Length: 555
Image (tube, rainbow, N blue to C red; front, top):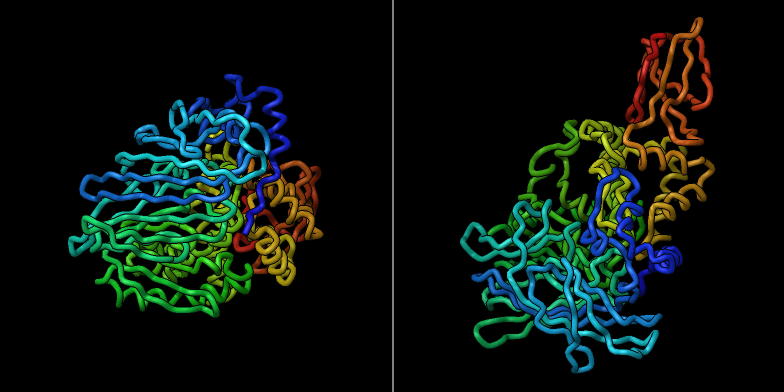
């Protein structure tokens, strides 16, 4: 199954022709929001330079984990194609990891290293558009996470019974922290991946996809072989090692597999009952599960959680809420398990629909955070869903743009989560037709299934498939730190109102509440409009429907 590649290559080739990449101004040219100073290291990680013009077809990874020494060793057999001569290929592996050898057709290749990039001298005359394989052997002590999943790295710990417990989380930091790959979200292996993990025979190793076989090895070791048939983000390729027991179930024809520590089986059986109603909701609103062939798994981990494709990391201690807390402070967030719902929604938004550059990670996080409210609406109704969205407005900072800086591996503001979710809710309210909204959201999810995309494409889709002019609304919330401001002032026997500080051609309606009655206004950013028989002090915003600010002009 092929995942559509991003539509940015023509621009990429133009940059190469112009030799922008060779310029020391490259990072500044790519910087679009915060005027930060980026280095060549940032560009090597985040930019698609000419040495990355190859297409990954498959990863076949084998890694042996020495838990006592916190040491890993292995090989990644990388299937790839090139469509233009490529004398030097860039792959990525953290500089603290050792390159043991790189082999192509039984011959070792020469290479150089710079920061976390490995530049490989390829033989001349590699056939174009013809699948090739390169084997990258490596070893070392991988970086240890200090606070996973917020910083990337391995987790070597023990469970409550003293058994070894190992996991890894690398979103943002990069999968090259622990295995060699083309570490850029724009190129997922079209044919999936095979992950072979060698561990002590007393432990179980869990990875993405389906378990194809196990093999007993000398020295009391065991190999677990997993296979993913769908395209997969590099940062989603993971391993988990522990004293796991397996719970199996089904939802329609989808295999459900839960790997939990033996001592937590009873708690898991009770808590994971939430999975089926959640899937029923998401099937209805977003379409069928995008990775049926690879199964749906929850894997208990020693950190909070992560959207690892078909092997979702779960560490919420079998409690509702977010570590037992309600992010919305409404009580609604305590009705369901945050990690189950949020990380599962990423299977649709983030794993199936993937941003080419992490500057556009709002495509992952805004839709997934909105999916929390979608689940609430499925279970407890629209009023609770809107109250939940209003509640999480309290944790939005509005201090920097949601869109990050392109080409330097830079995410935007954490507001991509709940400001993004409230942006989508405001767009729903703008459309003001729930039937049309749910059709639009589901069709987007299905149309962009297994697709790598960007902000421009996503915004254009929503704009094209609705009568509302949504592009300026998206651009305001994504590119401007401040939310739209509805400015009002006294005018004769009523008020005058307008949008202040909004993006060009911004035409979003808004609902105000006067004496417990909702009134829908269509403010302009170019002129004042008027309404009679209202005083400024009577006006509040319906924040359950629109995420905007109110300013009363006393002049």
